[in-house]
Image (cartoon, rainbow, N blue to C red; front, side):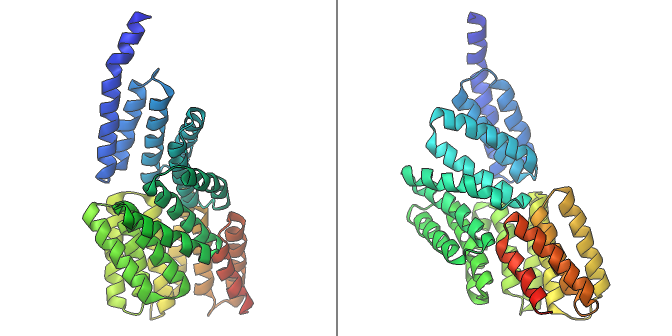
Length: 343
């Protein structure tokens, strides 16, 4: 027994050192290497108390999510949540639920994110921590944007922005501007989207926020759709940032946006090439999996087919609407339905 206690005491500093290295790697945009560090942390922390284990599982889950290993991320976050609930760690549980919802959103499981976000909001309201409040309300806003509750999404995004600014939470402030850009695009306010996207890009570049940089540049490209050369430049920057980040979900976002903007812009490009390119994106999305992205690709294919094969376009739009509505992506499902109603 004495030997076991001494071994645990010796492993504790090494475990914390491995976790610190993982944090350092995440901060520098190397989540795949951070996964290895956090795995080492858990190995060294075997037999440690539940509090230490809960933190390690959360760190590992978040790193897996950043690296695009979403199913493993879910397993680690669920273990972290169980530990934090048993320990009564309300702050940690709220944070874990928010990250859990983000992973589910990438997988396309929008409806499944409702329960963890509901509990995260209740916990964030109980805990006096403005940064946590901003984090949770950002996730709520992203969720509501997809479900079509735009007014509530706008309110949550604005609250998160104001709270983040008041407490100098620079990461959350950048994320709030990214979300406000997405909401402006949803309203058709290209100038508002440009202003918020550019603010998010500046913050992301200043503070090394790879995920925010990819999202903000992608939205900036959409906001500049009427300025093709500027839009193309933003997409090229987004593509480079996504490659550096190494998250396949963000790479998929950029490539899908590129194709959708090309389709909307018309021009002399070949519709058959666009359809085949979208088919390849569907294969990538199914392999991740990214179910919502599949539905969005089907909708884009319907747009490609519409001038040439109306029956095929209608079939693709129906498939898109069914998939997106089943996932809980109501706003985008309504877009597919609107295409159907036009015919």
